[in-house]
Length: 164
Ligand code: 4NP
Image 1 (tube, rainbow, N blue to C red):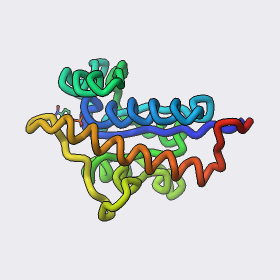
Image 2 (spheres, rainbow, N blue to C red):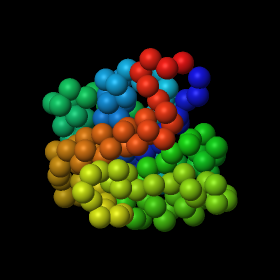
Image 3 (cartoon, rainbow, N blue to C red):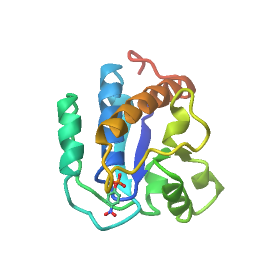
Image 4 (cartoon, rainbow, N blue to C red):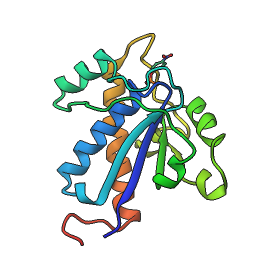
């Protein structure tokens, strides 16, 4: 049974991408598809490697019933082998991730997360809450984009809860 390997990427891997990861894990689980996915997140920067998610990120997610246990790690070129789908939160993540891509096949794995959110313009960013706040908004965005992403992957990978 094939597994779809999905990695969410932001700058610090302590606010946006751990939220996206946790929301997507919940949605996949609710769809009965946990065995069909490997889900992770990473940051393009290394400042917070090994740290828990930002306290406000964890508090916001916990309040919505989505615990975040991820420890920050840095995105590395090997992640292009380890993952099939790489979702970036903003244009700067997009540039930094593409700079590590070894070839066109790797570049084709990289998508803007909000491109899966219904009604958004291409390359709409998940706003960075680290300095200015907006953790609830980030969570709301992740919920909308996660729903669209899961629907897309179920369609393109012909996944159903009872297959395999
Ligand atoms: P994130 O937020 O990329 O959503 O995890 C940030 C976390 C840390 C920093 C910037 C953004 N920082 O500059 O340390």
